[in-house]
Length: 389
Ligand SMILES: NC(=O)c1ccc[n+]([C@@H]2O[C@H](COP(=O)([O-])OP(=O)(O)OC[C@H]3O[C@@H](n4cnc5c(N)ncnc54)[C@H](O)[C@@H]3O)[C@@H](O)[C@H]2O)c1
Image (cartoon, rainbow, N blue to C red; front, side, top):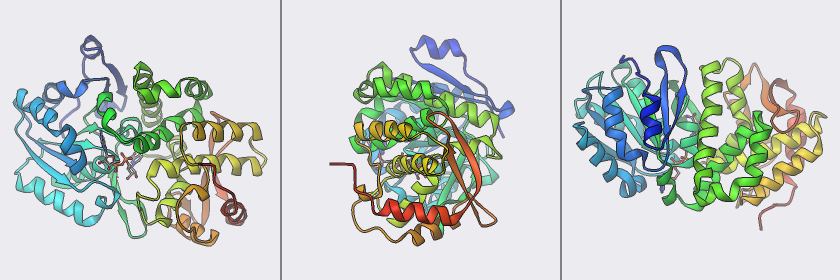
């Protein structure tokens, strides 16, 4: 495996970019953030992985918008490359697509020291990362995240994988990238709905461990959406938060589980709608799941009710859903949610593990939550009215 070489901080800053290091010893790498960062992708990849050839994995939507810029940048740096394009959407995170992309990387005769580049959202990143972890027992991997969700969350930390019939992300590997380049200008082409969905993960960092950041978001969310410098600040703050958690607990033995705030409920919702993005995308499930985690924490006597009101008000202000009734179509009974949760990775010996809160910025992991309390809570949630107009 090629050792990762941290970029020179001065170099990134000289280009008006922000550099966030992820400190993982020999597997350390940088996240380079800012408008226009993709133009220099080839040069930066050549610095970190000199002499390598590349396979760019992307989806059909992103290819039409941003692939040419990346290819030109690789050409300018002398990096020979193949392009592997997959259909956009969660359905691509499956075995058949994994096989196809692995074979295509091998068709391209990429060697163990060459690089797989993910250009796209979390779906491309998770799939391409798992391919990189698997082909020739592990190849270097670079993330060029193009959705807000991927820039602030999925491209950092090395979790890669695909979905199984039994649930989301149940097959995969930890495989850290060698470099992440988050060009915030590419977010200008993202649909408002996908931008909002990514924003749920930004809000998550405030809600789980940084009340000051959540207050900053309450004051600055409009500027983050508008694309001003506050957008870079929000992406960088989120990456710093994720990098700190990952550096502390790379393989989720403890603290990293906090990043799952809202995800146990959220993943169950995604499974319930059969990953139909027209009804629910990942970040929307996380938004509803986070509000539910706060309400559940209130019910358990852990969290002041005023905090739930703030969470709900903020998510609603940016247009995110917060209740199960906001998901179009019929919802199944509470029992179905519980069955799905029982398959989630967050289950240990029958007891449910939840990220609960003592307030905004004070999340903690509770192992051994009584499924009966969850059933009662879900039954009430299924009777709630929606909050989106
Ligand atoms: N590995 C991790 O740590 C981690 C963390 C969180 C989420 N995830 C995974 O990430 C996935 C969700 O990621 P996502 O929300 O990025 O989904 P996605 O990759 O499906 O992207 C969302 C949509 O936006 C489009 N898109 C992406 N960038 C664009 C751009 N710049 N302009 C226009 N369109 C663009 C895509 O084509 C797609 O249709 C889920 O599978 C989730 O499980 C992984």
